[in-house]
Length: 322
Image 1 (cartoon, one colour):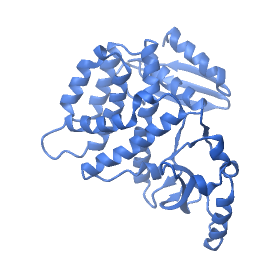
Image 2 (image 1 turned 135 degrees about the horizontal axis):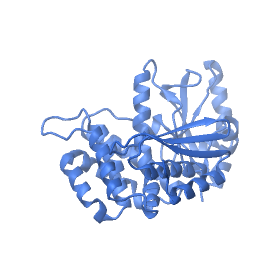
Image 3 (image 1 turned 135 degrees about the vertical axis):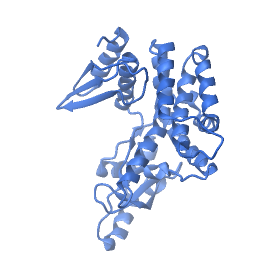
Image 4 (image 1 turned 30 degrees about the horizontal axis):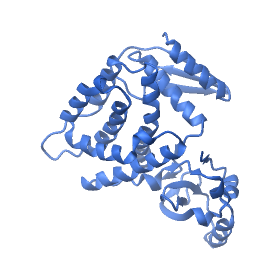
């Protein structure tokens, strides 16, 4: 498979900061659709192999993955899953997938802009992107139609970020098609999109705020439809973005430690999460002592630590505010 010079330049940029080497390959047939499962990654030692598995839009697919990697390597907030539902692996997996779907559009606000700027999004890519959405969804009907409501909203939220990043003339017909097929979900996704303030996403802090807005407003839309809430702010750990001053403050000045109805996936013990006092987002998960009699002392000592000391102890990644 042949990749464009722009794609290879981006590969060089990623290799310049990746702690190892990245190689890019491609093979497969053209499905005529774009989705985010058309590239695989395998790590062997310090070497990462990226394999594009669909030749519909290989440069779009490859640069999309490379830009995700570059944002992660440059400290943009990531989403982690350290909790699980007791005795329900299927529910845990479903929540992880949904929270990931809601996290990605904030990153894509940067990624799609970069891809459009470097000529990776044209009429063919737009058509394949829409084909990918329509392959996943069934059109809305006039009857009670909630079976795909959450999935429609999540995919159309990403679509609105996509079309916001490109030339309006390139996307007008596709937007009209999606609005006609999924009018209710498009309206719900629009509310989330506007709350995210997508055009302000430029750095780690603005991206962090946009992800939280997506989590909050998705649950608001689920409530409107009388559907179960995701509670992604509690379930999903989002890399905290902190100032130097916040790192020096004591834990109890910045976070609230809360016992939640989930298990710590590592210890399989009752979980405690650190919720930011600013936005109530899960910022870390604590491995509390298994012996309940020791927990009061544990938390008393923990609250006296500085945020920096705690994060060093639990090896918690964080991003420093610009």
